[in-house]
Image (tube, rainbow, N blue to C red):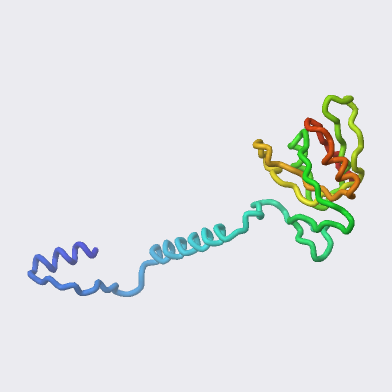
Length: 168
């Protein structure tokens, strides 16, 4: 529409830069399009501002953490315990573990018997790192252990394999 008016003005010898004025309100179809674009832009902005921890379609999880503890974050170290990083022989087990869970830590020493030994019963899971399929060895389970059990876990020979049994 602007191009036709400009061509008509130039053909008449009139070269003005007057703004084009609408006669009346825009049509219903135009208003609908403008409204739709505004709604879609608002929706896109809302999606971009959504925290990465929110997954679409997932119901909110019931919080079982005590008051004052962040629900998804690492747990505080209990009094008298030390934090120990453990690399599991089967890193896929990390997918079912969450901070606050209790596990039995089992170990199969390198070159030893095939029977696992219970190293730490009811160990508290402080944090789970790399549960999303990290294959570069960066996945670990951080457990709160009493100092004596922590010394035994750290002092095992290289090649020892750790496993956990999740407690209810």
